[in-house]
Image 1 (cartoon, rainbow, N blue to C red):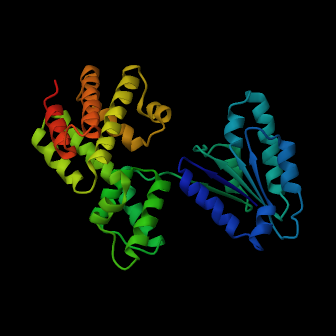
Image 2 (cartoon, rainbow, N blue to C red):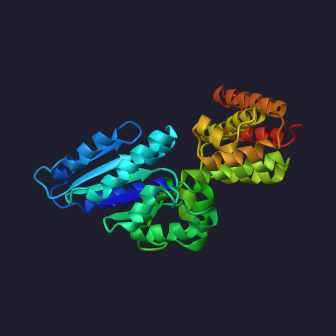
Length: 326
């Protein structure tokens, strides 16, 4: 039996693979012993056949997971790729009954692909595409995922969590597990719970404050500052502000060099939500203004650490100054 798991939703793909592994009969240690994970970019068809034809050791089933094979073949010379694909398609229907083969691809495979067609045509074949939910569908995904963790979440809280974290399903799942543990499943997760426990929520409040500074709206920025001070120590909050402006400097510089959002995300190793917000905010500042802001941040840090200014007063003066930056 063979499976084709393909698509960009890495979290759900990995979960499906794990579910198949858990359905293997026997002692978990023996299941691990009878599981082979192969790099499809490097293996030969002979090595794949050898892994699949191997008899399970003290078990009824053997699991073979091959990652990226079809994608690697598409990048090879066309004639050679076709030869290997023809051999693979001829072999798959004759897998040993003791073997479960999973072909894992991190991109969408065309329905016209020979292996896709074979998976549809053969009883021993299965195909499943994993597509990440769109942003507007995330709250529904979050609601269902909370139920899987044994809890519930209010619609506003689900929307808030989606806005803060974005479509990183693995991170969303981790945050939901934490939130359900916090509520004990005894009541629905609320917006206040999200704001209290999700680190992205506090960073998002810093985003809102920087938005206000970008609009030169000093009154809103000052109000948000004091809301944040209710939950954060002044130096910790200054560190968050410094981090946000550092991100603005980095994304603006890379954007001006012609890099797109995905390239910037990869280069800076930041969450896509952070880069998206940073790019939008950076439009409110010139590079010269951002450099001036950074100088003010350094001066504030020194003033607090040397005791020259009270920490809260120093932050008040900082925000007042930044809201007038030209």
